[in-house]
Length: 139
Image (cartoon, rainbow, N blue to C red):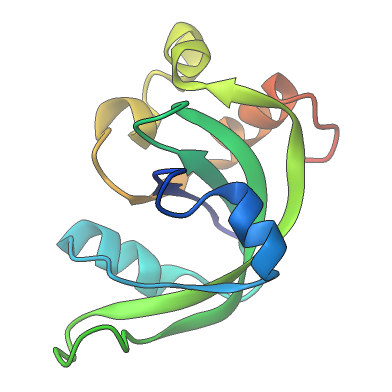
């Protein structure tokens, strides 16, 4: 099972909005690397939900509820969307500052490729962030 991280500005679409909606389509991604990651996502894969620009922190865990399909927000067949649903809020948010201070997370895409809106998270990175967020379970 792969792990992922997706980013959203909380004033555009927040974790709380996802919880309220119970599920959403993750669309509008127009970056080639992010597109590859969307296409690789499988139903049930866990996802860190990261608030970007404001807060800059991982706040919750979502899951892929529908695998990649043509993005209905564009007529260009090159782009894809996935559906996600919330699983649980982190016991305590994990800030970008905390992540950057953790030496074992230096290779994490969030640190290295900070602008990428959909990115993979290794098993080790997932487990470290989960512990930092006060979560016991590894997924």
